[in-house]
Length: 188
Image 1: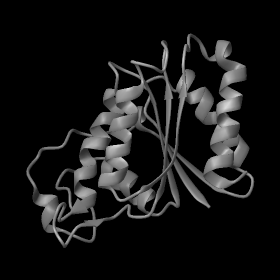
Image 2: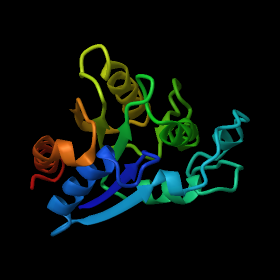
Image 3: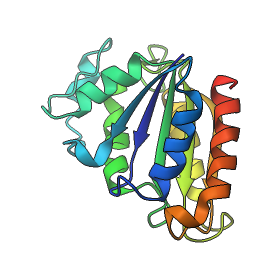
Image 4: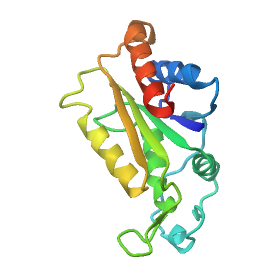
């Protein structure tokens, strides 16, 4: 199985990176893992121009940045993991820019010609947050469900690691979450 992981944190060695890294280590044997560190990429916000909607079989975005190559990697994968720290009850701004650009992956939304270039992909959400899950990480999970539904993807799981302070302080919970993710996503 080919798995693309998207690290949406501006900290390449923070809490989210730690949990995601443990997950990747658990599945790397027997599976192809391709990590995208979104903070190191140039992904501009969606222009809302609609030009992409005229190109049904490819991401027809007119912008020239790293989003096109990230989308190609996602389309070539069996599973896509979106990993983000919780910022203001949602995705990090780095991840949000890429999510907004998912518009170019879907054409004909709400019509008989509805088509997604991610149709059937297995998706999962990994979130780390400083506070509790309840009344804190609920909105990001709903947003993820809607994004996956829009993209006609199959949500495998949503994994939230609460009360994160430093990567070292979450070691046991990080490993348990990574093991659960691995089992759910690739049956490891």
